[in-house]
Length: 201
Image (tube, rainbow, N blue to C red):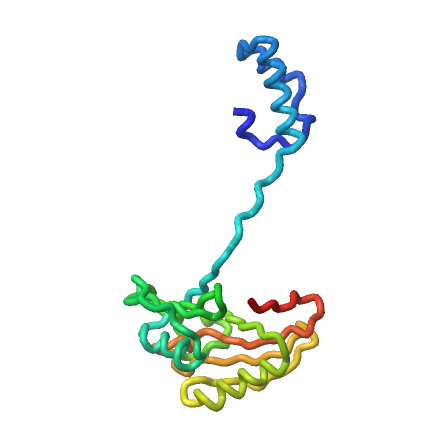
């Protein structure tokens, strides 16, 4: 029982533990081993290492699965993971090699048809940020979205924020009824030198 508990320091091994050991009817040799193991646990016990996170999915919801998926695939240009068992309810797209965006119809999409995606009380108000490695790449994404998909997507102008140390713009699905129009999307480059550098595989 004691060995399955995390004892923070050796100070926890005191006369009370010895008394408990004696009460358990341990022989002298067994008691010595018992105390040694408790001391070892007390000296070395620490929280176990956090497991790795090799992949990540961000889930979005649309009232029409195909329309929501077309925004990710046809407008943003993400590649869909093919032949998934859940494709009738959720469609998943690569955003990077091990990170994914997914759209599902398993629950009602956020309703922002009155005030739009930036409305204060929009229940789906959240930001999905795609981080790129240079200011030029932000501008390239801006050009891509404006020229290739202007009928489906609304795009803001790129700008620099000294408060957040970044250069970025937002874009939105124009379909707030059936698509992903209640979410904010962002392309961003961090000019903050403290931000981790991007290492492409």
